[in-house]
Length: 515
DNA sequence: CAGTGTTCCC
Image (cartoon, rainbow, N blue to C red; front, side):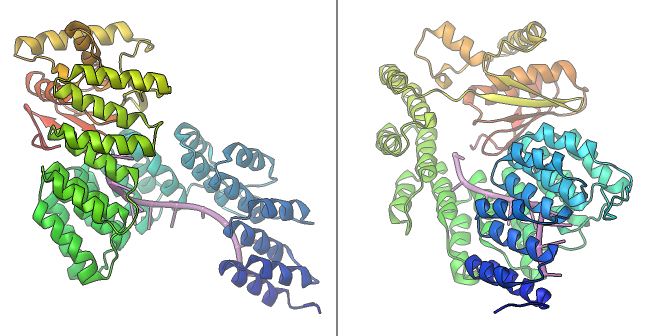
């Protein structure tokens, strides 16, 4: 039986089957179509991609008697999505013509692979004027392009670049749809400018669950719990249905300022009022909320009562709480379990070792480091980055490869001398090493965020805040150090660690030392 | 009837 003449109907059928996960039935229909056109082929290729059958997709693409730009776009996007960005790029270069969708697929491929520079480069390379190619497509960056690039800016903390894209959007009348606004809020939030994020939120014509959840999440990570609750109230008044992710933001908002009861209320509200089933993320937030506030036993009980398998992240959250509250006994139990689960994750060893150090139990801390060495577990280096004149500079703990190394160390030493005169004394308990005090102090004094701060003081405008992004959590000593820098050098510093933001100004931090 | 984009536990 054949479907001659019915190519349009057959194509719709193929698409339908593939969208339901029944790609093999789709393929049967495809095989019986006599007069297959390029759209029919594309639908089948895309159908394989949707079902994760990348090998068959590429095989069918290679068999195609005729291809248009969409055919190529499908496979470029497919390779980008499965992390084969090199293959995506070679197809992108090989294709006879590219439209805006081809460029967008390639840009997002780079972003997903973490190659932010390449993504930015491609954005700049895009023909900015309307070029009429063989299929008449527009290759000017559009709203999809900016949404693909903005998360990279947020990830890097590249505020200048993000602001430049925002102005590009306005200059070129790129449509400010809900995706663009959401991406802008996220970018500004992650780059430390919560005011700009709020402005975009207030001006957004259309507000949906994504946009509001993003705003709540941003306010949460900046420690602005009341404002986050306000956005949630707005959602309820406006009839915008909260999602499980909205509640992740609300729970984080509570845990960052220690609002235990309100957090528990939100947790219960999820299922009671909104029929949302708490996921492992929500339990993770709850453990953090309880543990950080000192309710370690309750946090432990929460983990034990979770309806799903506790992910290592949840245990790690409890271990962090043990560090804050110096509970060595529970920390040992949790860490041993974690090390069993993830023997190669350096974080667990380092955290327990830091807990021993904080308790003055240097022998045990040293023993743990020995175990790390024996198992070949490498300590993840602390890395801080700072954006100056549109470039992002990275610093590592004890970094000695920067071209302006000498100048940076001299500046840092001057800052340290000045702060010591004001009463700063390095908190050596934050150091992992069981070496003598002097060496311990050296390790601590050259933590990556201190190097980045020195570089910032050296290179940025005196009025602007110094914005730093760190890959790990800021240590006690750096936290004290930054507070003092803000006081005695009259500069505000905005530091994002892997957990939240710290806004330092005039000797204090926005986290009120609750972290 | 095919191809590009947004939030989330450490």
